[in-house]
Length: 408
Ligand code: SF4
Image 1 (spheres, helix red, strand yellow):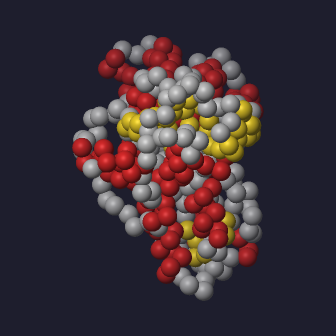
Image 2: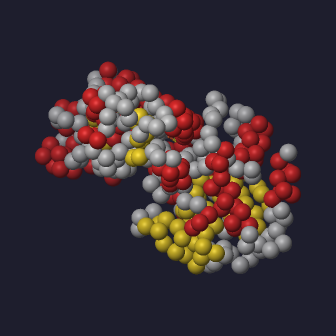
């Protein structure tokens, strides 16, 4: 896979070499066993796959290039480039300004932009409407376009489905930048509706079967359907695409469920399914699949707690947290700063959607075993910071240098 030129402060002298060691030993990515770092009084089990993916490294390389190539010019990002607070903060400290927040609310009015400005498109991509807005101002939206190729692949898949006269069902978070972009591109070619979870897929099924009427569809799916969408007409032939970072099992469940609804509704024989349901594979990206599979493998090992690092608004990271918290106490943190001391940690609660503080998160027993992973937008340096912070609480632990000898 292509390598990218990203600032060295995102790399780690501990984590990056371990990843490289594992990659070289398993080029075909068949071994999902975690890496064990045994410090004696504490053991870390680190997921086989985590951290910066292709799309994130590509985006970081382009964004820093945009800064170095445009001294003296104003540089804007449409919104957060990736969902990681450290990366976004560093770009802002270098003078980059955000035009919108993550929900699409305008921070800087379009009227303040000029053709001399540079605008970086984030890894999630952007909508057709925003591309048109930028070109109306005279800004080339493709000069520093960091849209991940795996997101573009979803747009292409939606277009292919549309060409065959299927409507597109997007499984994604309706307000997420990537899903908004995919929705916008998909609706150029086909009627499109977003479903956020199985519950909404089940509600959508009642419009496929005719149990619910159009009027309630427009209320229930407000802001999630394309202009002119007619549930009586546009749900007879459907295909499913996904936001690239959904939970693989959820996405599979929704596609299988909707397929069965179509089979039942139209009494389809196996060779007739394609008449009503586009037979496509999911559009999750490789990093989502690798990171989730590596987390399942991590969870096969008994441990006292899990720490998952990443931005609290990161979709792929939150799914790793969901997997871990179904098995053991899990702490979702942005960085080592959230580890307040040996007995106090400040972490994000996905259910309350806010940070909470937990006491005595580390076990008293020795050795403690800690699972450690992070999302696709989290730098290795953050994971190193977490590991060394926890390690500092254990007197007599083996040194990092000693443990790293095992990876040479
Ligand atoms: S998580 Fe997947 S889709 Fe998103 S930037 Fe990374 S590779 Fe691209």
